[in-house]
Length: 94
Image (cartoon, rainbow, N blue to C red):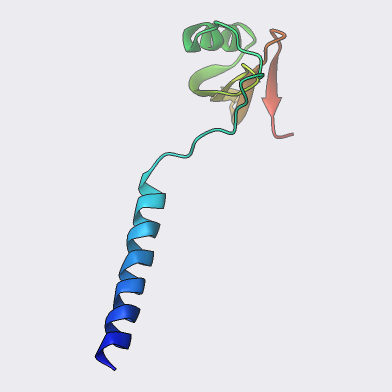
């Protein structure tokens, strides 16, 4: 009986540890080696977004498609915005 309890306790501990590790490790983007990559920077993305009329731009990531994603303010409202590889600045999520 003790071995069953010990096994059960060990299994629970392993699950808790695995869950803790999974939540503390950053998620990796599902990018492929064939995804297009350009040499744009976060500063360039921020500048392009500001020139398009967005304020308080906070760039947070470059996607696998070389599009930069950010949070910003447009006409007084918070929005998600993207600067894509074609050079377009677009509001996301509408």
